[in-house]
Image (cartoon, rainbow, N blue to C red):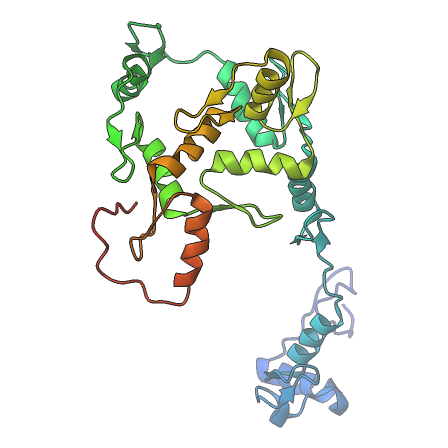
Length: 317
């Protein structure tokens, strides 16, 4: 039809003529077309001779080195710091959630009863308590409370019978639950595993730590029903109500006639007469009348090796 030869292009309306090029011819042609300057020297490829000028790390290709050098040009992330306790966080949302512990803010409220929570997850878990609960087959014959497990009913029933099967071997105090005994034993050993992240003060239980946290946030949720004065602890509010408004009778020591507004203060005072020393050092067995005396004594054992044999009549947790 015509004398024109085409490479895979329809130049002629009647016929397509394709020129077949072998693989070896294509490779030679490509190599000839590539400029000499664009070729990377063979000696520089896959050899660990490309060190980073900033950190000294070595790479086997210049391209990897260039990609690594960009990591040094990135600015380091500035941590978010709490203005109350100076603790730092990598993310702003974690800082916001942490600061609610200091401020007492509870932005998440239950849609049923209006109770506030500092965490959305806690609020959702609480709302589920308002949903219809499955049947609790174990019912208390005294008060009618129901429980899922028989063991829960037995433990609850001790509140009616007054049974306290867990006894302290040091001071013979008794408790209805094993958790109460473990918490009590810390008053003898001086152990305070729950630490305040703000001031470092230690406490025997998590509940005591949570109550202490209110002193930092300034929150006083317990109001006196008579005068409206706020307190961070419920016990302090009740004590205020008794001493200021009700003016209950004072507790009198039978030995010396000393008077106290609190029964707990009276029992502490009576140790001066009885010589009772309920706080025991687990390392040397020495006894003390006051918990702060035991805590001060324990510091003397800080750099000493604890003996393998425990003293007699000392109960460990």
